[in-house]
Amino acid sequence: MEETETKQEKGRCKSSRKSWPKSRRLTDFRKQSSFMDDVLHLVDGERGQTGTKQWAQDSETLNNTDSEPNRQAAVDEVSAEAGPLDVNYQSKDGSLIWSPSPIQTAGTLPVECAIKKTPGPTKFSCSRAEDIKSTFDLFFSESMRKTLITLTNLEAQRVLGKGWKKLDWKDIQGYIGLLILAGVYRSRHEPLASLWQGETGRPIFCATMRKGRFMTLSRIICLSDMDKRRKKRDKLAEIRDFWEKWVKGLRLVFNPGPDVTVGDYLVRFRGRCPFRNFMPQKLGRYGIKLWAACDARTSYVWNMQVYTGKPDDGQPVNNQAKRVVLDMTSGLQGHTITCNRFFTSYALGQELLKKNLTMIGPVRKNNTELPLAFLSYNKRAQYSSEFAFTDTHTVLSYFSERKNVLFMSTHHKDATVSIRDDHMPKIISDYNRTKDSVSNLDKVLGKYSCKKTSSRWSMVLFYHMLDVSAYNAFVLWTEINPSWNRGMSNRRRHFLEELGNALVFPLMERRQYIPRTPASLCLLKEAQHLKGDDAPTAPTQSKRKRCRACGKKNRKTSMMCQKCKMPICKEHAVITVYCLVCANP
Image (cartoon, rainbow, N blue to C red; front, side):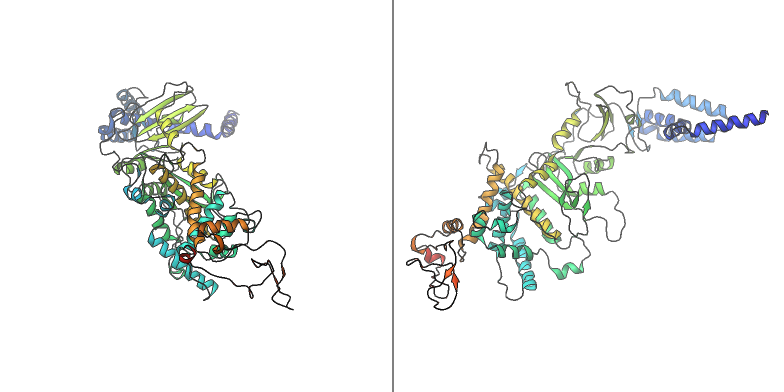
């Protein structure tokens, strides 16, 4: 009977133990299994780097002790040498030793961590930015223009046949100008038929080119040779050469300030693309993911990279976050890099310090490089801060509104906290000041975007390149001319409108076809400086009537004679054509 009762009691204990929550069972197991490891870690933290060998010897001695009294004596000896248990911290993986007090002098940085280049426009851009149009042209070099013209003409001959008349840079420039104006008027999602409509449309669209011509250019714009890109296995081969030349031009004309933000954002696209991403937290959710490095003060895009997904062999990419930040900051020196929790790590901070760069960013709670003491905040006071230091890094744990936020920095060397009621640490205040650069870029680009609906991912990226170039040109122009339209709340809208008008003006000057609407004709007259009898006259908007010179033929026309006001067709009309030199005697 006694044996039966003992078995039943054991069964009850096992069943009750199984009914415990999983977290409680794991906690008890960790307490029992890692007691000796915690004590030895604390000893290693107390002795610093010099006590590593001794810690190894102590651990070996403890592991080799067979009897329980000897093991307990060793633990007592180690605990006595360790002193207080909360003096130092060790990371969860045991690879780092953190100290609660600063190791270096407060607020000091190496002398080599100074910015070598003057922030703002470079001498190259200041000498060439004469007006708004020339500022925008800095982002499209002569080689890029020749490549775009040549490949577009080849694509047109392939699609439309030999009857295609070759275009030049003025045609493409006018096309870009209309795209920018469509973004200014918030008409990027408006049907093209309404933009070219005579009564309710925009006169400048009819005065620049025909609707059919605009649709044809949207179809044949090409950024790479099709024969070459078929031989390459690069997913971005369709625009790789053009993209790299454009990114190189972004760095050439502007030097970022002391704070640079690295982040990602999404260009919305739902068509077929080998590297289309799904990001549920982003607006639009589906699209092309881009990495960007922006100036924290102006949101100027200094570097950009397209995320093309995993390689073709299917192997995962190791240390992608660190690789992206190092690529985005290549060429910088003395700057402070602000990044989000996807990028921030201890290894990234070490690599950036080798390039004379510092880092600020939040850290994920499952990061194994954090001290164990930072993960417990049940007994923490509201708005309390805890710091841990190494010779290069600083880690912060800030408890606010029942939430524990973790930050890592190589820029701050002390535990500075504000005197406000929330006792905000300086690390968090500096991060909040510089974190929204990439988000602000995505917001301002979406306001006056020139992106049109397209099923080609290469054209979506081309439209985005135009948006970024226009915004960078605005930042560059206002930095060179700070007094331009100062005090106006919509300076960027006026800049884009003047830029669009300047881009379409050369194409309007040489246009020979007469637009039908009077408003478009007035714009064409102003562009060609035609007056009096030399100026073309728009046909009347009355109903089409039979030509008086055709006799029995039932041929209707909308043209009228300028003297007798009789309807006349093109066959019996006399049309005089002037060149620009003779039209302006």
